[in-house]
Length: 446
Image 1 (cartoon, one colour):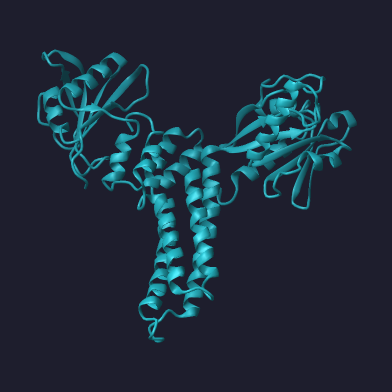
Image 2 (tube, helix red, strand yellow):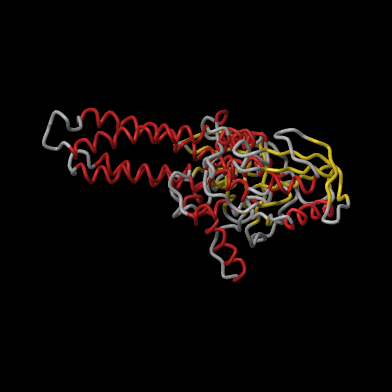
């Protein structure tokens, strides 16, 4: 437990009117605030129907009061919850009364931040709280709940333990460098490095899948002008989101639309057709389209039958690692049946965005790519987790490469870097700036 902090208060339910609203208080003054507002000494973890009183003794509202004494509460501090009717006026009056009695308004995410600082949650679990609240599908909610239950943290900790074993062996080589019988065994180090590498690879893949599931995959629709990119966006979105005409260059800006496929979210970005243009406005649209391509995780490259060869010039500069699907549109014009083919790892789907023929083939492919691996056991993750793992991987690769050539001191330093990068995920190593940036994204009252 850290040093006692100020008592904080906030409405813990969404803005607006509702049947029930909850005001949450956390801190050392919570018990005294409960006694004054409710008029009795609260019993731990027992809901009691009572009147809530203002400074003059008048009734603000009637509802339930619950008290959770430290350390057995969400924040690890004394916590009071007042369950009132969900009127913004009533809830604001309760918050104002708590502030009169020594509390202050809570910052965004401050309750979860205190839970982390008091050891009730690690940082990855605290972030999972926000991810669970923000979940837009059952798949996202299940993944966030797994992280909240500690699935992600346990996998990080398992890798940390392997790295700790490596550090012990290497430190032994430093401490007992003159005694060969006590120095690190090269074969044992190689075995531990291999184990760490396997654990790391599996964890990084699962984390990337988790981050993709949490935020949704960013798919960019690209191609030459007038091949049906906007029609494809409309067909996948199920509504007329983009203007469709026979005039090339109609799309001038990037249009984004979120779609859900069986609980998997994709953000589709319709972009201007790629070509050489002297039109200033269209040229700006093409520049934005290429910028969007650089950020895409998946490319839907749209073309008409017989124009596939022109795709290569459109994709110049796009890394081969970016997933892509080639979409041959307007098969209704040629009287061709929908189809799926795969050549060199690139899937080609023939369809008609106008009639809908073949769209199911594309949806199935989008779901397959968006789901990634092990979707049933996925946990929620964020971009910062991926960056931390990538830094850990760089240090691990450097330590393993230096095993045969470098001194133990240099290997030990890289292994220390691995452990520190992993510790940033769960909050073992974290700066105040990092914590502030993370919890500021939470909602008030959580």
